[in-house]
Image (tube, rainbow, N blue to C red; front, side):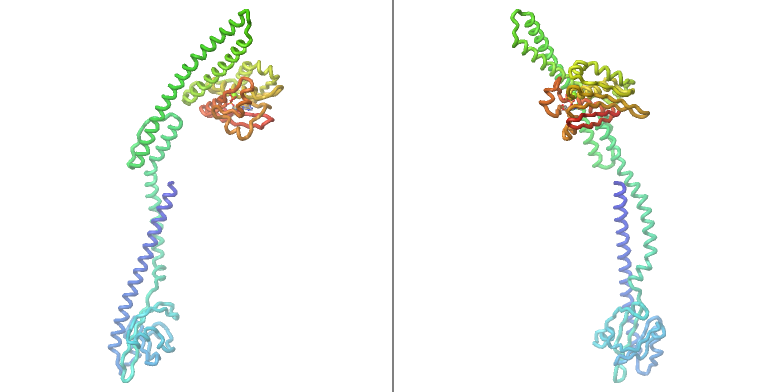
Length: 458
Ligand code: ATP
Ligand code: MG
């Protein structure tokens, strides 16, 4: 923006200056030519008045000092010409065709500006017809004038000099003006960034520009509105969790009672047992869903600073074996070979590392068929720690890979539901949110039928 402002302003100043120069050169040159025309008319009139037959015309043509005087016969022959000696011109050809002579002959004398090829100079000519005995002659005067080009060339060094001075002044002044004008924008940028990071502190900046003050006020209003919205949201989740969890606990309890009484009763009702176990499965699913939603909302409301203050060194290998132990049943059922390669330590909130790795391992095990392989690889270097979870399971189609980190997104709802546990589609959203919160990088490589590898760079 600064650069553009500078270029535009300088261009405008330069164009203005050059136009001004061109115009002044044109006006000066026109004024000079008009003055020269007046002079040449006056000189011709004086000379014509002085002319008579007895005069020595060789002497006569020299009375004009700086002006070239020519006496031309009625037939166009040059009788005498001060230009021959003064300007070194040959004047042997007939002059009857010269426009100023024609004009004088027609009784309407007029001045003409012409270029002398001999001298390469512009002359203004004026002629009068003067009676001489029984015939007449033409008395003509001519003054050399500088052409517009000459004026331009003469003023060029001055123009250059002024342009250089103007360029330097433009540079200094525009720099100051732009710095001064754009300063509030830097402040606005900082405000917007802090707003997007969720740590906005209202601190109105007052600029001398009304437009900027209005923008700042808008930001303050939006920040306030967002702040209110965030309270409202936290309240909603707190209420919703209570409202959902209380009946769930009750349903679970009553269901357990039904199952228990059914087991103990003499007549074992097979149907009731089936329904009770279905209720129990669905309530379990709903409990997981509520817990995941609450976790997601909790992460969203966690400040970066809180995550940092809870950081401790987390040994990754031990953490992975802990996670594996929670899934021994399913790993055993599917005869999945579970491998851990390398080891490393990451400094972070241990619950965050646990949740990220747990979700990835859970997916790898869940979306891999019988006798599959799940490999967790840890790579630790001096400046980074990487953890990747790879499986040789069903894989994810390219188009879905862009969406699997969105909330509730499942590649194939029926497919996932039929898989063990039945996913809710929140696992990878939690992973993504935790990565954003902790500045970790997450990447995914997957191919349907081949497998999936998700890598976290801590
Ligand atoms: P949740 O993790 O909340 O219990 P979920 O596993 O369905 O449910 P995500 O972990 O967010 O949800 O994953 C989203 C979808 O991405 C899954 O439903 C599944 O279709 C696909 N997916 C994730 N990981 C893998 C993987 N390793 N192999 C194949 N598909 C996967
Ligand atoms: Mg999952």
